Length: 295
Image 1 (tube, helix red, strand yellow):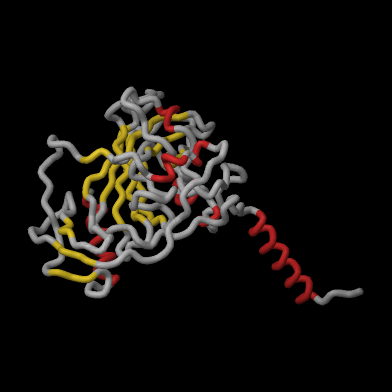
Image 2 (spheres, rainbow, N blue to C red):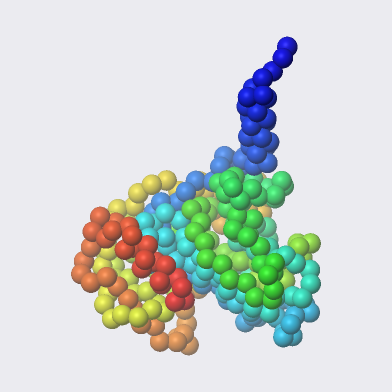
């Protein structure tokens, strides 16, 4: 039977699509679900260098320094991240980074952060397909948005992740967990716990003023609104470290900023508003991005 050129091209395209699908792996509980009820104004931060776990050969000597800042996306869907790292090792890269299941203990042992945050039980293999982030481990940030150290000893990135939660309870909540930086061979270099800097809006039916740290302005926004959307399922019992029921329930309390924090100037949109009805998504997006970049 003879195939025309166009038929052969269609078959080739279909085979390419199948191959692309095969490169993505769905977790045992399905693909990751976008989180739609993150509280506007919530801010978390994790800082490297305060309690170094390992000091490799670095350009300036000493540990890797930097931070991961996270603020709620403007419509409450997912989280916007800013990553800023300096003094990355001179060799052994590129360097991956992930949200891990447990917080780092006071002594700073990164190995005790356990495995990657993986509430849908996807596993590490095959590697994450950045074209299909919903099929990746929820905590595999570098797999979805790029590794560090590919362009020198500093690394900066800003990205939006739909699948992490700032609401305690679902397995995708990261506020009581840690972030870990790895060599290419998976050895752990540095780690830090996420700490709550601003709780944001209470989405349980009440109101609260949201003072966003690290930006200019002198007003306070009052935002109200019901929780909406679907959140990721709580993690179930499994042999994987990510299925710890205590972690799934989000019972651990994030550490709040201490009194030594530099003076924070709150920002807000004037007046009372209903989110997102009374604030355009474009305006909210601009506010979220400006807050994130100011952290």
